[in-house]
Length: 606
Image 1 (cartoon, helix red, strand yellow):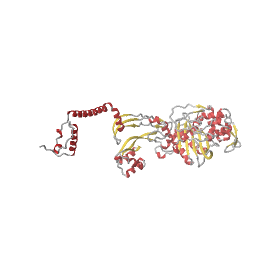
Image 2 (cartoon, one colour):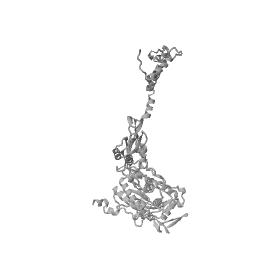
Image 3 (tube, helix red, strand yellow):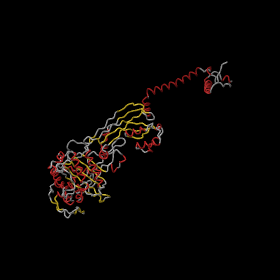
Image 4 (cartoon, one colour):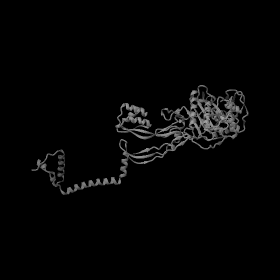
């Protein structure tokens, strides 16, 4: 008798399946009588299946295995590209390799913008176990709101970014916290050594290291270069497991500006002091090399620190020299007078009757601050007589005067490669009546930027030709467009020198060692379509007057304390900037008294 062991549940299930198969495949399909227990427990290996049906079953099994085999061959040999792509979609990523951004230098090689190494900090959320105190510490170190950090860390099984462009000293402090689950990936950060002083020129970048303002924006493609990339395999938590291939980036190119950091700093300090002294709204100054057209300084105040985004405000970010327009006032007078000289209408010693200190033009009365009586053309400049300027300007055909202003650059945006440069407003001559022609001659009825004024004044610093300005270093003299005859430029400089002499509107201006020629401006501001008792004080001039090297234009917006006129508010800034700049550039003094005494340089040697 065979020894049958008790069957467990699995064996009983197999026995039941075999029994059913036997009932189906045996040739005798007649109903069977219930079997005794001993027969039901008969060894299944003794079951007999018909040969025909066993072949059918074998064929089915072989067919199934063949289908599986052919499918495997198809997948492995003929459809690999599709499957690899599907795998890459899930685990492969193309990561950018940022190109090193080009540096920005001033004309002497001083770094104004550089790229420093930094880190991006990432967190694998399920591995980070930070206490409330540690979260608060992270928030303070990374300058990220605590609520933002908590929200990012609350995501389940995620790989999240906590901060980008983190300074290396901050990274070291975060690492000292010894938090698990943090990953530090290479990054870069733009740094501006000049801070507020050069901020309005250089601008700044966004978090992705693309320019947003200033030179950074205007030359973004040049500075950025071409980013590289690398193909990697990452796990579900974002960890890089394998690098498949890499394409190296092409670094950006450097820029060398025309700016002189020394002069820029001096100009910035002078404007800031003047704005604070006179409780003004804002101030600006531009310094131009009249030989090359290079801009040596470009200052706007109030300022901002491009290294600290908390200081970013629209009113502080914009460069007022380039983007702001205003009615310039009396600094426009020399252009109409120069054209009259060029046409032979007047001479420097021609007499102009300004009494009784006012003139009627159509339905408008134009007045002077005083009744100056009979003045020469030179005295019209020195006293800044509106009446004398209008009498001269009305003798010039409107089309001729408009053409002169256009050739000087008014009504056209300066092509300096700087974002936001404005054209101002100069209406066509056909829209002028006698009143418009008169008021434009002394600086009302048109709008201009301080940069346009500085560019136009190069016509007096040179031989009657106006030159385009540039913010890029230029090693050769600029080629200008002739507007006046060379002798007219010399005559105008001689007449504008009287402005700073006794009796002139800028008699307080003193520049030790150098002669200067310039013009003051005090213009009412327009608000809600009406002129109000708020002013823009300005001064524009050239130095040295006998052999010009610089053109400097200064504007102080809404001075309230200690005077409001250009000769009191803006002229001292001009003097401070010009004297410092000429000494920095080692320009020899031309003041007759200083030259007779051996000059500043000779005295310094003694």
